[in-house]
Length: 89
Image (cartoon, rainbow, N blue to C red; front, top):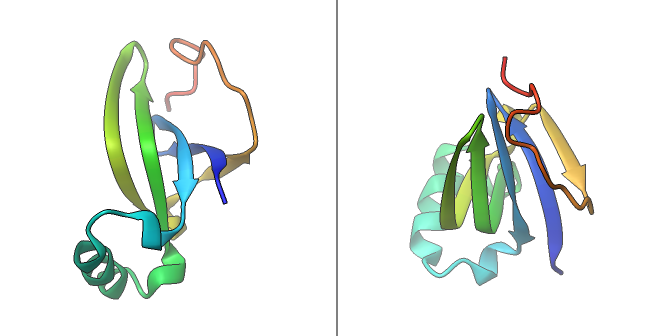
């Protein structure tokens, strides 16, 4: 199931599509990371992720996030114009 996510992670905003772990192209990397992060349920897998920090932006094909590090999670949002919106700490 495809779900758009907006995540606040430290002083960064991460926007992307949450996907199932089985859709991640390197399952062995996912398994190793899940073992380090207390199991697969603690790993959020994102595709076409955009990381925003002020005016700086990075794009990643895939991103693994540790769920217990996430400060906030937006579900099903359309987000525009976050750069410079004062979301930094």
